[in-house]
Image (cartoon, rainbow, N blue to C red):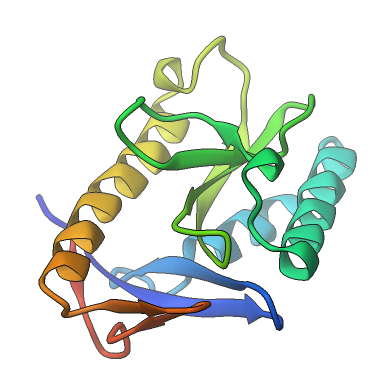
Length: 159
C-alpha cells in the first residue's frame, strides 16, 4: 500500500535548507517524530544532542559529505547522522551540499539497520521517496535552485 507524503521545510540558513517528509496519515514530519521521541529521553540525550549539534553545523557550513555516514545501498543517497559513535541514528537524504531531506531514526541495537524492522522501514521510505523525487526532477515538476526545492508546495508524493 502506498503512503501519501509531502515535503516541508524544517529550517534554513544562508547556505543550507533542511526539509522533512510528512505522511498524510498524521501530518507530522518524520523529523518532528524523531525529536518528540528523543528530545527528553535521558538514556539517549547525549546522542540526541550530538545529532542536533551536527544539524546546526550543517546549517552553518553546508551539507558537506564528511558530515554524513552512508547507510543505504550503494545506488541510493540514504545517509545517517551522526558520523561518529553512539546508538542513535537520524536517517536522511543528502540531495546536494545545500539541501538535506530529514527522515526519522532511532536506536541502533542491531548490527545493521536491516535487522531492525523500525529502522529498516525508515530507510525504505527514504529510498522510495528518493526514486520518486528523481523522477520529478527529471521531468522538471520539481527543480533545485541553489538551496531550494521548487515545485514541492502542495505536491503529494506516493511512496
